[in-house]
View 1 (cartoon, rainbow, N blue to C red):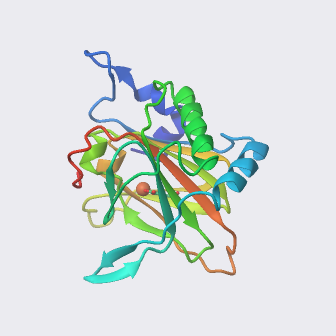
View 2 (cartoon, protein in one colour):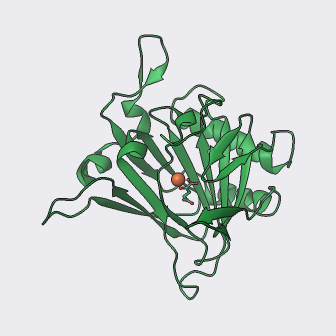
Length: 236
Ligand SMILES: O=C(O)CCC(=O)C(=O)O
Ligand SMILES: [Fe+2]
């Protein structure tokens, strides 16, 4: 998928069609990334940052890295109604009635994104939250390709606070003389980034580390997802 193609697609939902069973589906070959810089007004983004930065059940959990247990380079929290394994973690979600008013604000935000993407209300049933204290907190290359999210997951990502670079790179072997296809976005306070279709199969994404001198501010990220099969929590 070329840069021009990504720019041309205004809405992730351009690709979503009702299937024969009436459910929304995507053509097998399609994948898209859509960036909406000012999805939230500055006032709403500021309010949400204040409501969530301390009030979520943030944890810094360990992961296994080259056989060793190390702490993840960011804090995470997890909301919703479904069990979901992510990375090394299999966490019970914080329910909508806990961590109030943060969880209620996030639920409302999920409904706002569903409206924007013309998805049914309460389509998203889990939210993964990341808290990066500064440029030294980061997320390495990965795909959100857990089988429990189905074949063509819609991942809707809201950013608050410090601006950070978000990178995408195509998976697979690169022929000699060719360059790996890459995309880059600088995720603004109040922005929305949506990945759909085959993006998790064909691309990886990351939020790279930067020097403290370049970024000493907090950033929050909330990714809205739909777990379609709670029983299968393996990688896709
Ligand atoms: O913080 C971000 O923008 C990236 C988050 C992400 O990729 C994830 O939670 O899977
Ligand atoms: Fe991700």
